[in-house]
Length: 402
Ligand code: EPU
Image 1 (spheres, helix red, strand yellow):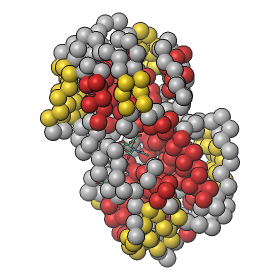
Image 2 (spheres, rainbow, N blue to C red; image 1 turned 45 degrees about the vertical axis):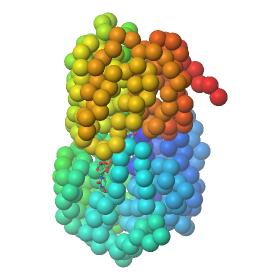
Image 3 (cartoon, helix red, strand yellow; image 1 turned 45 degrees about the horizontal axis):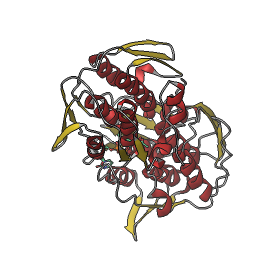
Image 4 (spheres, rainbow, N blue to C red; image 1 turned 180 degrees about the vertical axis):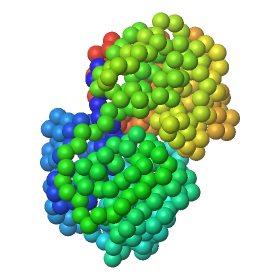
């Protein structure tokens, strides 16, 4: 089964297209609702985004008549806040809605604002909107108070066109940041250190168009591997970047899976009931919070007890209650879920609450006795390309019900 391009790399890279008048031609773009939402937002700004043909997407931000991100779009997808840095850098002004609440935690954007202000932007918040202005952003040293992925991406993009050098300290180190930096470098940006916690960006006057292939989706990859580990069997995934999911692979091995990796290929074989594995989410290279729900589903049917601690978001256990409806034995103690594995889950009707929670519920449904119906799958369509078709190809009995 072929893995798609990474959602969380494609979204910031689409925002990077705003930094130049010339077209950015992307391949390996996943066909997802979130990508369509971002394209719609860029379209509203006056950018004539081409229609996505298979995995190809061309974004020529030649005209940018309306540097705004309205509440209606920002509230459906927080990643839209990443237009703020590029808009300020290119147009010297932006009006972007504050994202508001979120199903997995409080998720403020104070670090994005702190960084842009340090670079000389004036930002006020009025009537739910961030109004930002600047003559030209100036490079400076920014120490982030905490590790934020989109915060790092927003500031890195803004800094590419700033006057002088920007140093981002305590930067996030996610592989998607490295992919964005690669794309920016092809566009002519001068960036050093992406993938480490100190990123140095020397501003240039202008960026040019480029071609870029989006990296493989490590979370989609991990989701299929976790599904195979829970259900048993052997699957082979192609088009993957195995080195971007070391922490996940290590935990799967601990659960008893045999995994082999070759250039672009990952194979997993699981013959026994999984052993329970405890884990603690953390920024990269730690265990990804975006894999936590899938591993909770795995722990639900494992031998023994797993302690699953969520340290990145403050409310990312909503799937635990739904898993309990399937017969899972889970107790939440603060930021830790204590999961006692049961021999068998039972199929039931459950409700998806966010993207990765939905993936966890689908995995649980695959191994539960009888039929499981997952409701509100629009969450899944935001971030997984044809999940049910891909799982069906791998032997799962799954279908989309209108
Ligand atoms: N935070 C702040 N202030 C800020 C920014 C973040 O307090 O200014 C806090 C957040 O509230 C959170 C923590 O910092 O507690 C980390 O959040 P981060 O900013 O890193 O998350 P994000 O950039 O909004 C990205 C992914 C998420 C993924 C997280 C963590 C994209 C588009 N989204 O979000 O992906 O969970 O990093 O790895 O890259 C998903 O794909 O399902 C998803 C939610």
